[in-house]
Image (cartoon, rainbow, N blue to C red; front, side, top):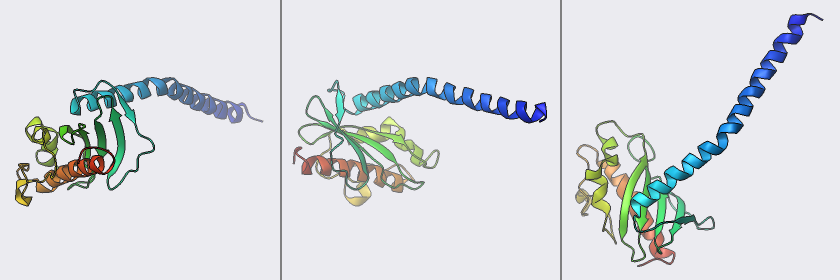
Length: 174
């Protein structure tokens, strides 16, 4: 047997093992950072709460992807309604009275300069204090849509409405 036939596979195996070990070392810090980011986002949409617990047994309907119970009796829900460029990941805080305490778009594939403006305070701050029905002005609601980006604006409204409806149907305020 030739030395090259033994050394080359051994070096490849050593490199693969090193990469696998390195990824295992970084797994926990990445998970901790993701949890910190999630908690900061939840605190942004529900500033009056200090802790959140995921309701793993909650029935997820429509585009709702997760439900968290806040220590103040409210909820934080994540939704992924369809926008112009795909799912618009939205996080909505709703207090014990069924009123939106905050909303953030946490991820999207919308057009830069148009639908991407859904992440700007001028747009998402309109949702705070809303309850009942949430819709853009073109649909009879109070939310002023992003110029030339009604599809994205409607998607964010749909996510907020789904969150409000879930809270109303699952023990929250009506």
